[in-house]
Length: 114
Image (cartoon, rainbow, N blue to C red; front, side, top):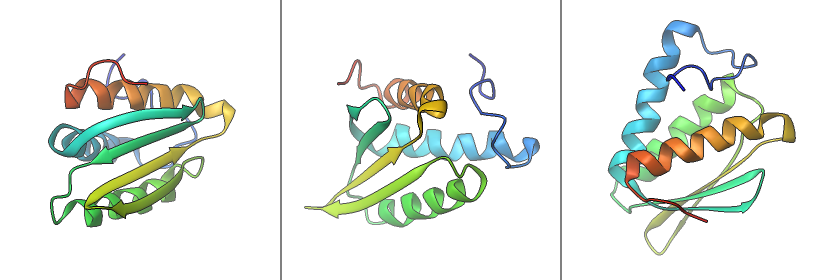
């Protein structure tokens, strides 16, 4: 799957900006993702390192992503210094969440996660 193949048609981010947004998520995953779980088929839970700027980066990305991909629902918490990002989608967009999870695991070098 190429970088843009998994981006749904419902995404309103201009096509030329999509690779830049993907790169932002990729950098966040590769530098800060420490754990990933799937509490439900339509939910993803990411745990990120507690570096001082991570929460602000996550909140900024989630807000911008919500603006172009309204099918995402984000939940961000900071517990014991770890930033936790919950991502939920409807059943139509589950393949997008699947692709995002696969990409995150690969970039963070986490191997198979449950």
